[in-house]
Amino acid sequence: MAMECDDWGDGGGDMNAVPDGVVQHILSMLSNVRDVAACACVCRRWRDCVPYLPALFFPRNAFDAAAVGGGAADEAIGRMVAAVSRLRELVIYCPFSMARLPAWLAMRSASLRVLELRMDAAADKEAAGGGHLDCVALATGLEELRLWGVLMTNAPAWGRLQQLRVLEIVGAPLRDTAITETVAACPNLTDLSLLGCDCSGDVSIQLSMLQRCRLDFLGGGNCSLLLSAPRLESLEAQGFTWISLRGGHNLRRLSIAKSTGRVYKVDTGRLPDLEYLSLRGVQWSWAAVSSVLQCASEVKHLVMKIEFCGDFDVLQPFPEIDLVDFFNGHPKITKFEIHGAMFAALCQKNSLKNLDSRFCIPCLEELLITVRSPLNAEQKLSTLESLVKYSVKLQSMVIRISQMKNCHDAADDFFEEICKFKYINYRKVRIE
Image 1 (cartoon, rainbow, N blue to C red):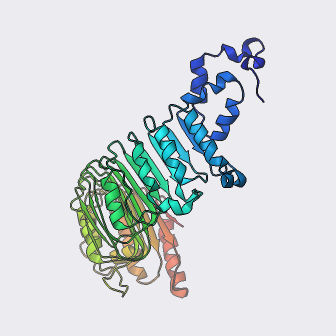
Image 2 (image 1 turned 90 degrees about the horizontal axis):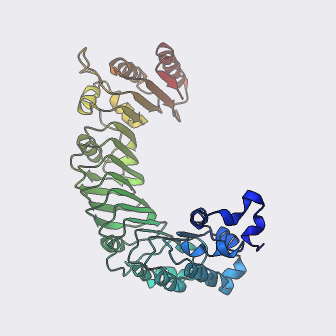
């Protein structure tokens, strides 16, 4: 395939007529090593652009099994890293030897800014949990670091990565002390993601520059979170039993979920700028639910998908919630997604006792209501009618009939009444 660039030329199509800067710019858009290798074989002029490539991406299938097993893959990675003298981004998804990583990082320590490694693909998996991650400290100018499948039972010896802004760890068994010490080594993080990680114990994170945080922890055990981040704007926390947030006054998005086990306590402090709040899980203590709702009085988009309340093993329904008090306490809600338990709590006998002609829901525009039982049908219909009547800006109400448990005549009658309600308010109401 090798040829001179001017062999392509015929008239105005001569590649030699293209300025060097344009050629370098076009080739700089390549990162996949297979594409880079193919272009380097075209002609010397293209090969001379390789040192100026900003990124190298080694996909999972970059090398065959024979190359990986015989060490040829590591040699090829080393040659390409050595050839790209201005390398800013290095992404390795294919199997590689952890023992060779320090040499590669040392070669490009001055220019490297982004590093992403799939540790679960490392050819020597036993070393993936050892001290080979210590070599990340060689890249002193690193700004973004992403690690997949790393075993982090002890914090790596990184010293202080002052330039690191983004840290993402995916699918890793972690110890709580390792998390605390690793994060402390990156004091200027603005983005932190620990996704699909297995951890229990007390996780403490203190980052003065943090703006976005995603913590997705697996397992049904008890895990607590103490997060201090005065500039935090977005927080997603999954899998924690206790959550304490300090300095969340700038928070705009908050999502808390726990798919197994219970959420006992959530302490956030007042959240005056919160725009989006999502609470999900099988069981929360009512104290935790009410605490978050009181602190988020200015929220605009609220998602409530909690199945049960209760502080112990006994699953309990939500207590009664006064509809008037709730919307008076959250006057800025524009979009509200209500799961069956929350909707049932708003539909209790005394929930509508404070309704009068002066009451209105001023900002509500979209409602999504999930109904899972025909019980208390009269009160539920009355609540639906009230929501339509008093929501002066309502544009859309979606009623989602999901897993109706009581499959008998009562369910049929209830659904018939829902259909009548939808027909009367056809401009705003629809059924899923």
